[in-house]
Image: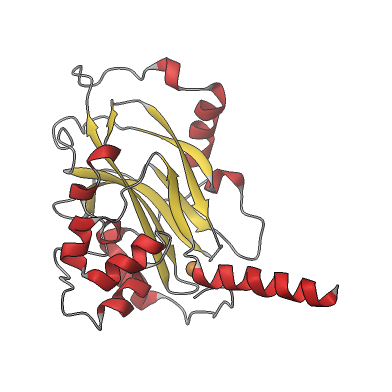
Length: 248
Ligand SMILES: [Cu+2]
């Protein structure tokens, strides 16, 4: 009896150590593919293809031993270097005002901050304000609030021109766990559609629960201190990381 419990615990521990720790579950996120392999190199590609929840620091560690890692084309600070060219099947079409439900899979908590933002992929900068932000995200000392796993965001106005073509913009979930020096990014590829410019949201796709969640989440969260563009600053300013045992 004790032996089998030990085996189960060991097996669970092994899984925790191997698996990466967060990724968007829906809408369908940008994933690894051949175009990524071509610019990130075989090992960085394999690192993410086998576990899309891995962190960018781990990718950079793997990349050190690679000659075929191109740090410009494989920009791990944007969508973890995952490439638009691999994700033609995953393009969403949105209209201004549309409420988009999402699910984020927190596979292991690491205390940090997070935001969901529209990113101009040409400059890796946030367009406007974050759609959602979490001043405290995935606190591993607490039960994770459900609104960090499931919620919705509203497509802002003013994207019709800049984000008309898929690949120009992404919606990025950016989770920066300074407590353990791990950063996770997942991206939604989208294009603005509907033709009407600032057309109203299609009400049929919005459940009352999703609308309530969308209204509730932003009010409870301060503006983010960490964005993709301030990643280096945040890293310098971070306190000494507290080691956590449940992470590879
Ligand atoms: Cu982790």
